[in-house]
Length: 236
Image: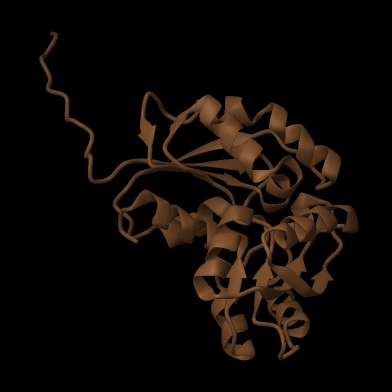
């Protein structure tokens, strides 16, 4: 028996959003589930192949896969915003190239990434002098620091866990993140701290770090979630 059906129109007041997540990332999806729990727009996820270790080589290789990853988001939909979930990858590939590659694969009105989002958040808060906490090895920290500097944001203190292996990064403990962030951010001349890497678990650390330092604390996932809300124009 074949039955008739009606088709609902998409809600124009709740345009979809998308994120492109690294194959090795175990953190951004559960954290975004918390950041967007009250947001009316659907959030769709695609994955991009990524190396088991974070090096400038494995990061630059992602450029070859970004458009295809974007094309695997549900279509045909017009996305209010699509986020590429890799801070260091955005620094190595370049935010403008990331945007071009993502838009080549899907219909996105806006594209962001943790680097662009963190810069926007710093400007919103009037911050230009930060401390940086990252899990990265030195060759990955350098292009990140340079990318922020090009936007007028200085990292006056830098600390790293010096870990390239993604499956270890995601398991760095809450205590280790908080203690390291508070140590590198202790200088009173620093206006805030940025905890870099979407695979670093920071959701529960941000408020504790900000409270202990009495200064703004930002992270890759928190900044990109905030920027996606701003760019979506819905439920800010």
